Image 1: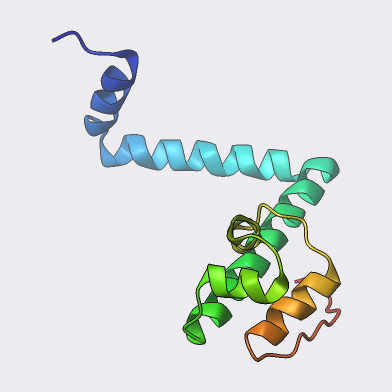
Image 2: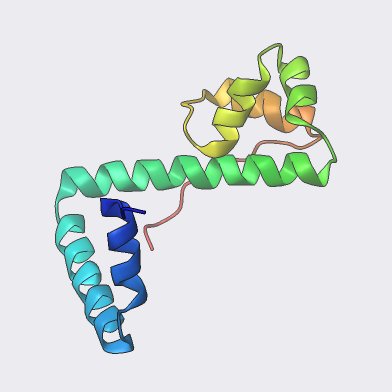
Length: 117
């Protein structure tokens, strides 16, 4: 059987030594550091990270209340797919929607401003 380009790549990764992996990680860390120095990229990264963390928190409170995405969607009069995107961090949401989501889970939405870490 002929190996695909992806198969050859995966096979090459299995032959890397610890030293090779350490060099790759170091190179990656330097690349990320350089990219994060770009203010536009850093802003986009922080925005995406915020949405993902917010979605994760939403999912955790829903699961703690033993509710499904469909149940939340019905209470918010929206579709389950919208709730899935919200919890995944890929959906822009309004404060009103977050307030409704929290209320549907029996929670109160609290927003605060904090200093940068």
